[in-house]
Each structure stands twice: as C-alpha cells, then as structure tokens.
Length: 348
Ligand code: DAH
Image (cartoon, rainbow, N blue to C red; front, top):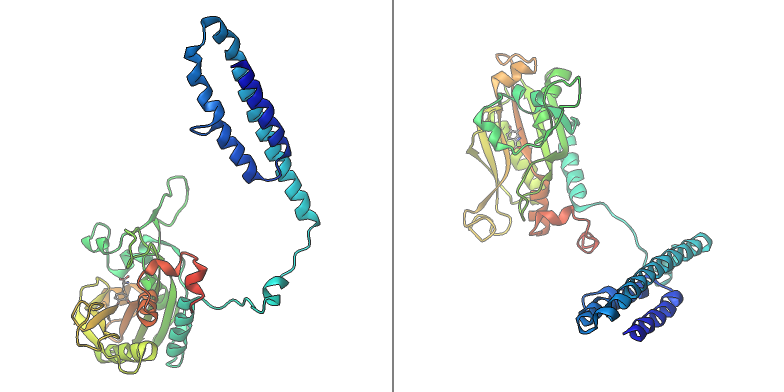
C-alpha cells in the first residue's frame, strides 16, 4: 500500500509539473480526485489493513493527497501566468476573417429595423418622438392614467416595483415602466394641442416568460390630440400603420376592449398576414391578430394632463413591435430577439 501511494504521487507529480494547459490539469485532477479517481478509491482498501499499518498509512495518504492538490493548484497558476504573458506580447489583427474572403459586417437588430420603419411612417404624418424614463413613478405609470392604487385594472400589468425603503426622498413608489403609456401625461403637460407625438421604448414586466411573453419588451405609443379627433381617425391610422409595416393588403379592425385610460377602448386587430382572414393556425382560426390596444383618451386623463376635454379630444394606442416583427419575419419565439444568439440575428 505504501508503495502504491508513493507510486501514484511520483507518477502524477511529474505529469502535473509538465502540464501546459488547464485542460490537461483538469484531466489529472479528475484522474486523482474524481468519483473513480485513484486517490478517491484508495481509502476503500484501508479496512483490509491491520490496525498498525493503518496508523502508518493514514498520515502518508493525507500528505500525498495534499501534495497533489497543491501541485495542481500551483501549476494552474503557472499556466495562467504564462498565458497572460503571451497575451501581452501577442499582436491582434482582425484580418484572418477577411483573408478567408468573408467580411464580418454588423447590421441593425431586426426589431430596431422595424422600429425605424415605424418611426419613419409616422414622421411622415408629423408625429414627433418622445422618451419617458424607464424608472418611473406610480403616478405617471398608473394613477394619472386613471388607474388608482388598489384598482383591479392594475392586474393587467405584472409590475416590477423598486424597493425604495433605503431611499430617504422619493417622489412616491417607483417602478419599471410597464408600458409606453407612461409618456402620455408628460406629453400633455409639456405640449399644447394640437399634439402629435409617438414614443417607442423598452418596457418591463414581471412576466412568466414563454414563446409569446418577455420580461423586457418594446412598445410603440402614439398620442394624437386636437379638436374633433375621433374613432374614425383611429381606424385610419391603424390601417395606415399595418399596411405600412405588414403589407398593403392588411386591414385593421377595432374591437371593444377595456383599458382604464381610454373611453371607448379598443383592441386593434390586423388581418392575419398568413391566411388573409380565412383562419389558420397562427390566428387560431379567427382570421385576425390583435396587434395593439387603443381608444379615445379618457376625459379624466386629459384633465390630469392639463387639457380641457370639452374643447379637445384625443386618441392613443400602444402596440408591440416585437409581435409585429415575429409576424413579419416568421419568428416563433419572442425570446430569440434578445438572447444574443448570433446564428439567429445573422439571418436578417
Ligand atoms: N398600455 C397598454 C398596454 O400596455 C396598451 C395601450 C392600450 C396603450 C390602450 C394605449 C391605449 O395608448 O390607448 O397593454
């Protein structure tokens, strides 16, 4: 047994000291200390030994074990140092790719491309871009939009609140914006009607993530306020939007839907781009796909924004550019857009 231990020690110490890579060292580590490693298995033979032998072997075994562990650790450090030194003297060039005839060129993210198209479409109609903060107050995100604290409608948005218990002065409860509608009140307070504004930005939800739901999502919002603005304008703009992005033959349909900040509220459907209304798997046989939420801005919200609802009326809507990109490019899983998989992104 003594000899066996010494043999293992000598054999491995030599190999370890010659090792040139971390991979090699990992292999030795496993061969010694893995489940069926030589050091791991040795104590199984101890019961066969006499009591006296065991007293001798015990300390030798422990010493050997420690020596080998230490040797591996030292050599790992050495190998790392060597590779750092190499890095310092090595010259990097970006040429190999090009010399293989392949230029590796970046491009805009597919959702960014689509969003640029949307912005261009609405810029043509005189809409201007507006950005509201990601970290916002309950006031702008909910209360001033006619969603008081404790109102069941808050359940429409699974919200990520920010723990402010350690902050002395805050303007109230803080959260990550759940929708681009948090821009609405700011827009109304900053500009006088006629107002044509749009906001395209990232929003956040405490979401059960799956192929159709992401915790971080983009939204596109418009706010259009003037004298005499009505649902016909909403219908027209919705169709202008869908035709511009998804194709000339895509119609829009307004369906009654509840949102606390609009009255009346609407779900805005686009004709299914795959079956053109006949009914297919993607649209669940309905022929239409919900692409946005919208409506006439609620008089209370207009008042909160400092606008007189007896003179002006407005429409607003919020749409999901990622949902539209999924349809346009035939992407089945919304998570593909943000998981950084180059193989996916290079297809665009
Ligand atoms: N903010 C809503 C959401 O996140 C979408 C929405 C609905 C926006 C109606 C609007 C609107 O401006 O009028 O689901």
